[in-house]
Length: 336
Ligand SMILES: Nc1ncnc2c1ncn2[C@@H]1O[C@H](COP(=O)(O)OP(=O)(O)OP(=O)(O)O)[C@@H](O)[C@H]1O
Image (cartoon, rainbow, N blue to C red; front, side, top):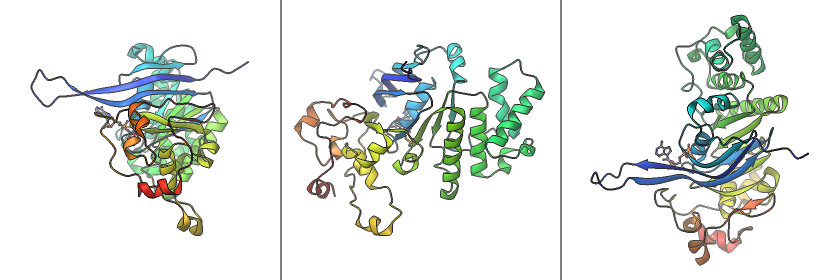
C-alpha cells in the first residue's frame, strides 16, 4: 500500500495587495510573495526550505496554516484543502500542524510562566483534561526537550535564547502534532547553540514520527536534518530533491550559487573552492522577470529563459530550469 502525502501542495499562491500610493482610483499594487508552489510532504519526512530573504519561505509556511490568505491547494492527508478554510474549520488542523518561530523570546508571552506557555495549546485543543494531567504532560514535555521540570514556574526572560527555543518546541509538541513547521528556528541563536537545537529537533522528529518543515536562509543549516530540500527564489520553486542528491549534484544555477557560499570546514578545500557570486539585486516581487524569475542573475540565461517559464521537471530530483546542470568555469567567471 502506498502512503498518502501528509500535505500535497499544488499551485499554491499568495499575493499581497499593497496600497497604490497614487490616487484613490488607481488600483492596488500586487506583490506575488508565493507564485505557484508544488510539493508533497510525506508523514515523518523532513523537508528543508531554503532561499534568500524575501523568497517567500515564511509566507508559504504561514499560508499552510491559514495565517495569510492564499489560493490553490494544500491538501491534508484526510483530503481537506487547508487553503481557504474558515477559522473554525482550521482549528482542528491547528493542533495537527504546529509552528516554531525564529525569535524564541519574542514568540513567548513574557507575562506567562513556562508552564502556562507550554500548557496553552493543550488547554485550547483538549479542554477536558484535569489540571493535574495538564501539569504532568507539561513536565514530561519539559523533560523531553531538555528543560528541568522544576523550572515550570519561571518566566521566559529568565532563560537563554536556546532554552527559550526549547520552550517553543515543547509548546509546539505538547498537542502531539503530525507536522511542525520550524521557521528559521536557529537563526537568532549563537552558532554553538544552533547545533544543539537542530539535534534536538532531529531526535524528536525520529522518536515521535513527526513531519518537519525546516525553513532556513542557508543550505548548511538544513543539510543534516532534511530528507529532501526545496530551494525557493522569488516565490517559486527552483529545485526540489533528496538532500544527498541536491548537495552532491545541484542542477539549478541558483542552488549552485547558494551552495558555493556554504563554508567548508577543511581550510585547504575552502581556499580552493569555486565561489559563484549572484550578480545584481533580487528583483521586486511586484515586478518579477518574465519567463524564469532567476534569469536576470543567471550566468546561463538565454532568450528562451525570458520567453518561457520553466516547469519543475524530473523524477525524484526536480529542477525548474531550461538548461540545468553544473555551471562551466567560463559561466562562473561571467557571473563574477
Ligand atoms: N503581510 C505582508 N504584506 C505585504 N508583503 C508581505 C507581507 N509578508 C511578506 N511580504 C512580502 O512577501 C515577500 C516574501 O516574504 P517572506 O517573509 O515570505 O520571505 P522569506 O523568504 O521568508 O524571507 P526572510 O528569510 O527574510 O523571512 C517579501 O517581498 C515580503 O516583503
